[in-house]
Length: 451
Image (cartoon, rainbow, N blue to C red):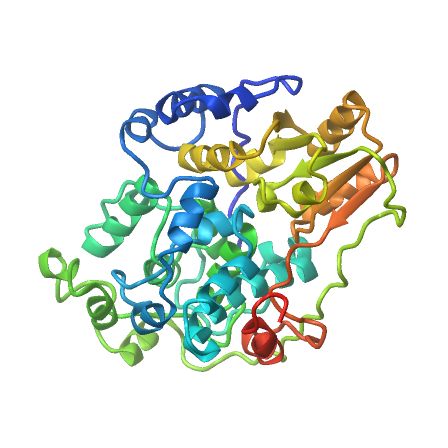
C-alpha cells in the first residue's frame, strides 16, 4: 500500500516568544476570529463557528454536565443507533479534562451491579487499549500493523481524499450527511465513523492513512491512537477482517433517515448482502498472516529518580490540556505551560473548531502560558525564565512528547506523573487483539477507584 503524502506545514502568524494565553479570556466569537487570524490555514468557517453555539464546548463545566447525564443501561441498549444514549464524552477524555477512571467511577455509581455498566466500561477500555498500543508501537501506528486481511480488487489506493467527498457531493445521502456533520460539528457517532471509513476504504479505494488524517483534522476527540488504530481496524490491517456495512445495516441504525430520500436508493455502493459486497470488493481467499503479538511497553518513568526539586514547570500536553492534569494537581503552585507545537500543526492540521475546543479546556488552567513552536526548546526556555529546576508532565503514549522529554532530560530533570489508573494491566502480556487485553483487565476495570 502506498502512504498518503504529508500535508504542507500550516502557516502560523505568532512568534515563539509570544504568550497566546490572553486569547482564553475572549468571548467565543472573538476567540474564533483571533484563532483564524493566527492560524490562517486552519480548516473551518470562522464566521459560522463564531455565530453558532457549539454542540460540544471545551472545559470542565461542560464535561461534568455531560458526565452527569450518562446512563449505562440505556447506553448498552441503544449505543449502536445514531440517536442512542451515547455519552459524547470523548473530546474531554482526549484532552484529560476527564480521566477514564473518573468516567468509569461515575458510570458504576449509577448502576446497582457492576455488570450493568460493563458495556459502557468496555468501550472506555478501547481507548485505554489504543493508548497502550501506541505506547508499545510509537510511530508504528502510522503504517500497516499487519498485512491486509483481504486483498482488495482495487490495485492502488488513493493517497488523497477525493474532492467530491470533501465537498459532500458524492450523491450518497448518508455519506454527504456524515461529511457535513464532521466538518460542521467535529463529532460523529461511532457507527457513522465506521460507515464513512468503510465506504472510503473499500468502495472508493482511499488509503486508510489519508482518511485518518482527514478525521484528525476535524474531530474534537481526535488523537492518533484511537483514530489511526480504528481506521486500521476498519481497513483490516489491525483486525481479523475488514469492516463492511450494507444499506440494511445503515437503515436499521439510522431509522432510514438517509435512504428514504437518497437519489441512489436501490443502486448505491452498499446495496446487497454482505456476501455480495465481499465478492464485489475483495478477491477470493484470505491471505495467510502470522499471529499478531504486541508486547506492552514498559511504563514511561521519569528520566531522573530524584523528586525533591522545589520548583518544577508543569508542561501540559494534548493529553492533559486541563486543570485536572495529574502534573498540575501534583504541583498546584507551579507555573503552567502549553505548547502549540509546530509539528502537531503540520501533521494534524487542526481545524478551527479543534483549536477553539482546546482553548476552552485550557481556559480552566489558572495562569497557563500558551506558546507556539518546538516543544522541547520552549519548555526549556520557559523553565529557565521562571527559575524552575525541573519539568513535570503527565504520562502520555505520544511519541513526540516522549522524545521531547528525553531531549529535555539531558539538561533538566523530567518527572512523569502517572494518570489515575483505569485498570490493573500488570497481567497483560499481549496487545495483539483487544479481546486478549480485555480478558486480562475487565475485572479490575469494573471496580471503582479505591476498591
